[in-house]
Image: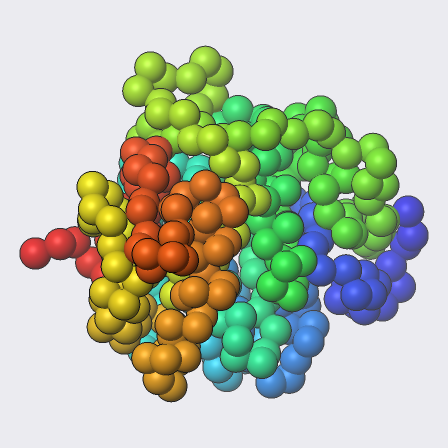
Length: 344
């Protein structure tokens, strides 16, 4: 553990994932947060803020007070509050440069994860690094079982490493069991902690990390603290795998399209045409030709989905069979509604 003499951002070196341990609603917490969000700036390219405890306008106010009036080139706020989602967003809603995603009140942990993955994945080919803030883990610890929160953090941090995203997560030590903090610390490249009037930084020992479940529960629409509700559907994928499946916008369109035709064998050319028509409706870098899209589907996206046992891609007959998974589809439905709106 090292005492910080300069800025928080300078102290962590090239760490891509940071646990920010500080009392909530303090100027020190907000200062450290904005330092981390702007550490690869100026200019300020891509910023994603996930808020679980305050309204979007409060997040915008923190940016204005500590950074200034200039907004990031690309900004998104994911409002994941269990109650009051959509409230407190008057200022944000008036700014077309900020994308606002409001999760439904019955959204669960994996719905949150796939929404974050979709957003950071949409900017992965912009050439600019994305900064991710999640505030705060205390809300998740109070809402879900400890192991589920650990699985989420591990999945998000793996996503950050895979997509070259810099992410930090807030936790208030005054409102978090020490046993939970002990589980969280090893999951990050660096832990920055408020200590009296200053900060300390330490590098997590990966060898001391906790064990992880191999799979996650399906969407239940409620808290998973304690025993699992009877309506939970098994989802035989890890958090890492689910986030990998949905972080690419083209691959999400493929999944949206295939789940609508779960009983059919879909000809490859037909799938290419269907995906091509839908690429304009999500944040996707549309290929410059249908032939290039076909190459991406045939050589990248369908093989990855087949590797994860989501589809069967028969190259001889050039057909795709989707393996229906109600638990995965529940999360895809939630994500598709956020991206495209409810079906007419």
